[in-house]
Image 1 (tube, chains in turn purple, orange):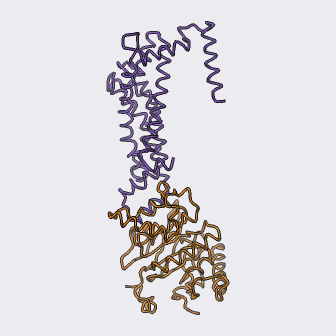
Image 2 (cartoon, each protein chain N blue to C red):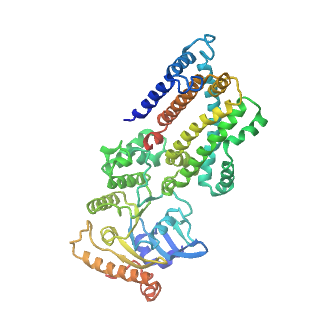
Length: 253
Length: 288
């Protein structure tokens, strides 16, 4: 059942492209997409335009996502945990963060270009900014909602505030933390493309933009599909890493 | 100490009280309005004594227990343990909560071992965990997660994880309220058996009269809004206590009439009156 709609879409696609209702320069045939994708991933550099660039582009993009996402975690996670438990910090930050959140992420692009110029810094900045909000907000709500008696139970068993944060608070709101991290990583990929559209040399988003200028619709679609796949894999890996390393992630989500 | 004068006669017989509660009151502020939850609570608990506090829900039993545990501070008055005023929670006063507050990401065994994290000797830790698993009869379930075991078992784990800390006082906040009748009876039996073996002091809060009579050396009856201790009653029945025992009905009737009386007072909002003079500070009620 779940395959009916996607497969009929592909069928319609094949029919449309074969009857020339839509010209090939707007929508290439599925076969061409596969061919371009194959060359892009497995071809040798110089064999054809874009051939063999997959590894270097993906590494470039991964590096940017990793840097931006890590920055967002580094700031958003501790800030979320602390504002969830310390009302002074919460009242200090919460309205400020929500005010910032009202600004659409895309509108930071011109400012980021002025500040950081074209290149990795702009992309990392955009990714970090976008990923910060879901990480911060979900961690915050987890830390706020945690059952007070869990913390009290720790206190009566002689666990201090700092150690309790690591052994009770963080494991206790692990489901929220995981949600925040996954949403953050997801949005990281979206903002990666935005950052790379500005004309950086390598990267999956840069390839898409380059292909647009060359009129290579097939390459655009390959890029789109690959970003979807890489994004999905990174989500699976993130979940696996958390579950592999943390009892609380393994046993509660 | 101040309390020794009031409870002087009793103190002579039983040594020094472990826990002293002096004139505790607690006021909560809710949107400008004041809500008096506890008023002038006084009592003391001696080593190895089992005290039950009975009262309707909303009479401030949990607040009182939170103050004794060190989770909350009283508005006035103080609670002291071993002549030291209680300000923070500590492993000498452990709480068994009403709802399930096991750490859901830890197994039964890990939950019980949680309080021993500071203990470095691994062999000691393992031996203690084994011992308390056995005491509450959960050896077979040591690797289960809290969500995989029943409510009664969860409370057994909750009991074991605090007993392993060797607390001097065990504070229990309606721990068996959500269990079915038979499980509750089993847990009461287990609690009495553990108490007879380990000899800690227990302050047990409940709204169940039968539970109080089954367990307590001394019962304190509280009324509502504000919560006050209206009556102290010593239960002199031999253990194990059964409802068909002679004398059981006497305590049941007496408690029931008190209970209903204060309940009505609370409902009509005339919670103050003559009974305070009659019953307060009547010692431990050794009238029988």
